[in-house]
Amino acid sequence: MNRRRFIVIAGSALVVPTVVAQIAKVWRIGYLASSPPRANEHALAAFRNGMRELGYVEGKNLSIEYRWTDDDVAGLPALARELVERKVDLILAWTTPVVLAARAATSSIPIVMVGIADPVGSGLVKSLSRPGGNITGVSNISAELSQKLVELVVQVIPGIKMLAGMRNARNVSSALQLKETEAAAKVLGLKFQPFEVRVPADLEAAFLAMASARAEAVVFFADPLWVSQRERIAELALRHRMPSMFARVENVEAGGLMAYGSNLTTQFHRTAALVDRVFKGAKPADIPVERPTTLELALNARTAKALGLTIPRSVLLRADRVIE
Image (cartoon, rainbow, N blue to C red; front, top):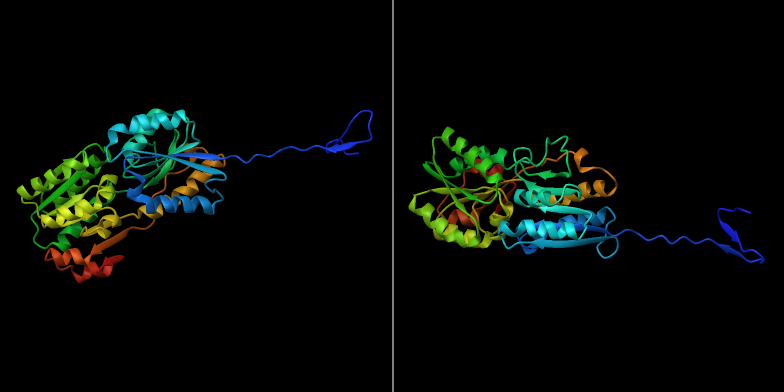
């Protein structure tokens, strides 16, 4: 008789199989952001699809707890601590201020970041190839794209003299983008003036200030605030006849003039593979931070027409997407 499979009860001829209940683990992810989920529901859907493709299904072996502020980073530390207290298995953090808040709350729970302009320059990881600590994820290299975006502005708006830069003052990564954009503007002989907001209520005053400074176009440094407030920003830009440039195609879909950068939906989908690696035992410290393999140029032809601009054919031919 195979003693590993059967137990013989003393004084009886009864043989009873040994049964060991197997209970599947439910992985718990804490999603943390400075904008409500509706601001990037399409990207979150891509993440959930990516997890499903890898065998993780919400309601079965996956649970996602959502925490966010309404476009204000001030409340992030408390929400990060709440997720830690909930003992989630992993924190998915969108943008630099969010990752900083999560890192301050825990040094043990894995953090997978997405949409980070410069992970090394922001001090989040030691290097892209060997992050160290409990953080890995996907970078959008926004700081490195600043020069290219300024070059596109000059091509689309011939004769431009004055360029504005818009930053979220509470996003530390915007300082890196500001530095790169200012340097690129100087090389191209443009006057450059930075402007900033902290919360959505600051947007209208910021546009009035840019108009008063006679800015002829504005570059928005990558930030979830612009994605969340994309319809309002497009309306303000059109009202002030201000050509607007972004890092995200979502802003062009809403009425912004032009965007050049990585695809947010693609980034979120790719992040699922990194989460899966962590769940299977890999340490974030050993998982290289990924950079986007493709960049997209998007143009809104309707907005260009409303602003009286003619997009050069050379730029149109390079565009990955043109909204007619």
